[in-house]
Image (cartoon, rainbow, N blue to C red):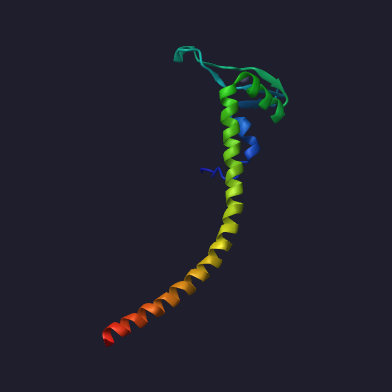
Length: 123
Ligand SMILES: [Zn+2]
């Protein structure tokens, strides 16, 4: 069966670029280096001891600037999404309040139109 991916944590996104090998307690960098031709493309393969996310990030930052920028912007998107959802809860409350005001305004205007219409049909 196919498992949904929804439980994935934000701080694990650095693992898109590394593969941890428990046997050696090392994390191998899987970033593909651009060799100019497809046939020359190979992974960085650099091994970092342990699986400390900060170490891995440091390696990306110093060796793979493009990938590090990708990682950062992905994290930034996640953060702004979180901020958005907080904002949305607030917006919903504000919306409900203003909706109530709009309804009151519409109703009083509707009364006005009904009165106008009645006057027209009468006159
Ligand atoms: Zn690397």
